[in-house]
Length: 153
Image (cartoon, rainbow, N blue to C red; front, side, top):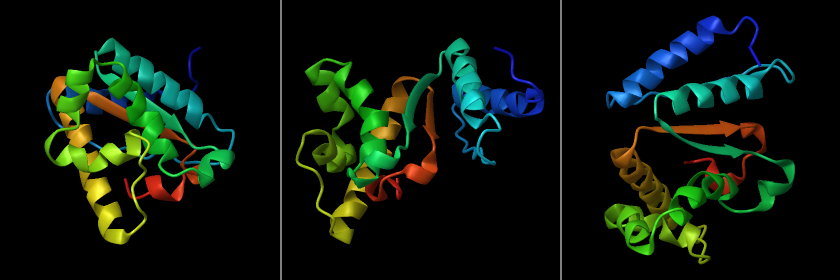
């Protein structure tokens, strides 16, 4: 499906994806009224990423998931952690990234601000460890439905 009137946005994002391949990070916020094609635009961006061999991790907020701690975080990072052998998973969660391990091993992090800060720090390093292996694209759709624990990440 071809997106209408989105060539400018796709062109800008293509440049940022090329930058990711070259080791430069960027952040993009896609916002707008409901029904204008944000989700379709994100799907097109994911196709662009695939064509550049940029690994896409995706999540989507949902009204029912707002009550689940780290729902968005788990949608993003559970698949790549489960897709690798145990030794590689251990490597991905080594060092500072280990501070986020409780999110994925069923022992959810405590909601104390210091602990939450450590978990967010660990998630940063998990993302960094994943990005060292492949250029990485994180897509979160419907952010308005994001659970509270995932918001700081």
